[in-house]
Length: 270
Image 1 (tube, rainbow, N blue to C red):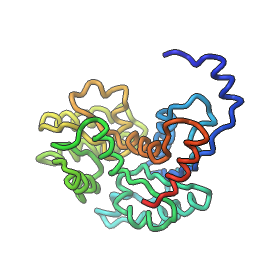
Image 2: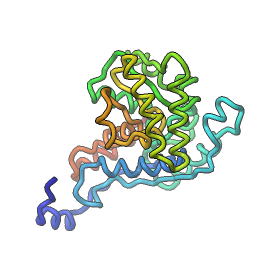
Image 3: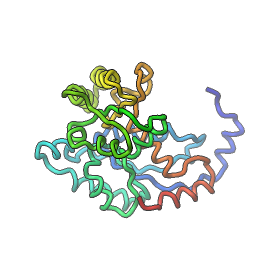
């Protein structure tokens, strides 16, 4: 990789930075996934100076009740805490909000309606990611939390978009996903790889053209550096959401004109 020329670096220090809209991130679900999303957004943004990055407000509060437990086991609802987080981000100046938690999107309509700024949808972002990778139809494997898999968060959207989603013929994909997610939530990412990889390989053997890592802990179980070993396209819901942010902010050329366009684009209602 070549380093930027000194003159380019010097000019980036003196140039007036573009005025980008502010992104709000409702994190904490889990906290490492929220922090990783913010980091991946920075890593995927093609800029040469700190000042050219998208300003981000990360509300990474892990006290939000468990989403799967609320949906499947009668646990306390996370909705009041999530709504409060959304409203905090809006009050703090966010002009668009991303939620790097797939299971939280089971409450998407209520969360979207709790604020007056656009809210990006992670499932739509993943479908766009599949299309960007040339997967526009056909069989797609889905991994995720018990709630998203049982309530078909991805399956319904994939069918509507012309895909054939599947999660396996038994509970093995769900069980491997749960093991990997639990390991990441316990800060044991290395232990998460084996069960996550087993699920990806099983779905690939069943004919999947792509496999969706449909929980934001799963990209931490199978990081980008370890994905070349798989004979299937892997759609990472963290990176997909980051790419959707860049597209929403019209992040192509880093000039004042493109920043002005981004402000207008972000302000558009969903």
